[in-house]
Length: 494
Length: 95
Image (cartoon, rainbow over all chains, first blue to last red; front, top):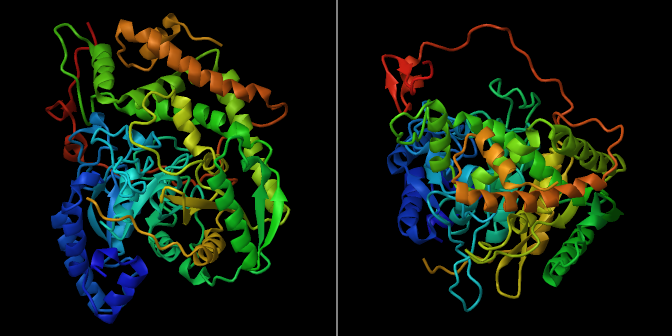
């Protein structure tokens, strides 16, 4: 197997045994990245940084006592600010922006010895479910339908991260998830994507979309890798007041595969009208696999599920309209060329019109509307009340003894790039129907590849856990992964 | 709730995004599709339910109110589209 195809766990063990070096791993990945421009997964390559860090990692591994991520080549989503390296959130308005600082999560990975290969493409400001809103252009899914060369979406917003991991351009990648942006692309590309509990990872230095929902997490080839990577991402950060000051457990140590007696909730409201049979069958398969592993299935009700997407499409745009107010052409990024006599208002309006893409403008304006005088109570406050009810649904299920909840990850497999262009925006938003509840309730959720559809495309199942119980959640995911035995890889065409 | 062209113009102006006149009707139509979807929230009985402000039940951490950072004028200005003499430069705002 070529080095770039290794998992984190395999590479870590090989590094520790001296069977390979971080430099060799990094060179294998850099060469895979160079050969995969057709996927458009990487937006900014950083080979010099990568090789420097790899050499340093080799020295550290040689001296013993290196963290799990030491010497592991990773991709970093463009939403993370990285010191001296372009960080644009895939937006034209941040063209040329080179932060003077490093986000906490990418700094933790760096300090653990992880090797940054470059910045990964994504939907602009993480707003999208197909990676078609990026200023860098679409990311192409390495997977294709059997017998077809139609270009498919890798999902979004962490589409570059998902495609890069699935195509073995890196061993793992960071993602962020505001409504499903880690889990949906993971499902579309046959990889594992974990959104940790809100507050588990620091948001400092991550370009903000919706601050009460955003959370960074690992996108990896296996559940074990997600555990290893989360270990070196998580933890309290005084620079993010919402990051929680509590001990970070040993996630990998929790992976026993023993889930006997664990209660798995099956929410009836996730059985949607018009859900494809394949998704329904996959879900049934997942139930059977967990039951065979000794878990106890329990039907549960999360009655406010259907209101999650509309509540999200008030709350997320509202927060975005506020967060994105900082892009004004004054302190960083793009400023429009002004006409004679233009004042500061024209500067703001022209700069933002030129710098933001269509979907970002749409959401900023929706957010502006729902927060405007006269509508604040009717939309924003009502959505926040509904959010309380959605969280209460989960609280009640967990209080009743449910350990984790099993649902489909997405309502379909990957669709074609451009297929949704003419649909109304709400159709695209429906991609997040199974994932968005988890963000609203601040819970950890993980997408695990569980099978292929009739066209040969990967499908994922989602497991949802109790707050700050990523370790037991990862263990259930590990048991599911073992039972599903998903080993398919996309056939290389790029 | 239906959004007309005039409301779309007002929202664009509040958001400080220039929208050409001929794009306003299409924008209003998009808003209406999204708001129509959001109207589903009106079915929910929210009487007596507190609006959620933060999802974690914890109190936000506090720190001493002291200066922890500073003296980085060069770094602060490094990304500015127009910086002059240690300041951000913008079009004239005072007549």
